[in-house]
Length: 191
Length: 114
Image (cartoon, rainbow over all chains, first blue to last red; front, side):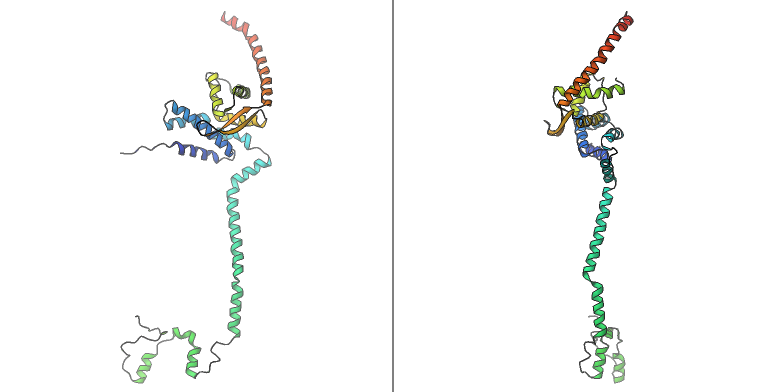
């Protein structure tokens, strides 16, 4: 069985007020007063035995439609003075402008923060040091092969594994059964 | 039912007159006028508030938000000195119209009735 939708007066008042609040012609105080009036009207109708939704419907009909009310209050609040123009502008564009300003502010702050990091200067320093200073191990007196290994240290990881060839050259038939490989060799076996 | 123009013209003296009884809020003002006129003066309820605000701006009345007996806040309106003077003038003008019309219509009514 379908359950009937419960009519909630509080929500109805809230929605009615929200609808009016879209217009810049109402101030908060006007809406307060109109809502107070509607509540009195609905209460009076309910005390005559009407249900909540019936009372609300008649109440909003008596107080006048949104268009009529807006027209009535326009003369009061929507005049031509600069104050009214400003109010209308803030009502229509205030939110968007505020969001835009926050966005701009955030952008500027990010930019300043990036500047504080001085990344480009740091990179320049690193590059200069790399070009000007000798390799850290250049001064270490080591034999040729070791020196060569030091020199190619950055490429260890991509070097092929020569051990099968060396094994063949040395006359060994196959690799030891447990070959863990060197730390950097590509053929390193999984544990 | 009154014509739109007459309703508009009579709103201010009616509000001032009702407020001479005691201070009151919008809804009660409307109910009072409806009851006294036996439902013949029917205002669009929302229409009253701009008029009240205009009267307040003209210092005919003053208003105050106050907690009512039902616990909700209501805006109560009260008559000012300027409002009393305005009402006196309104009263004279309306009485003039009323007396003139009464004098004019008296023989006509009796003749039509006769």
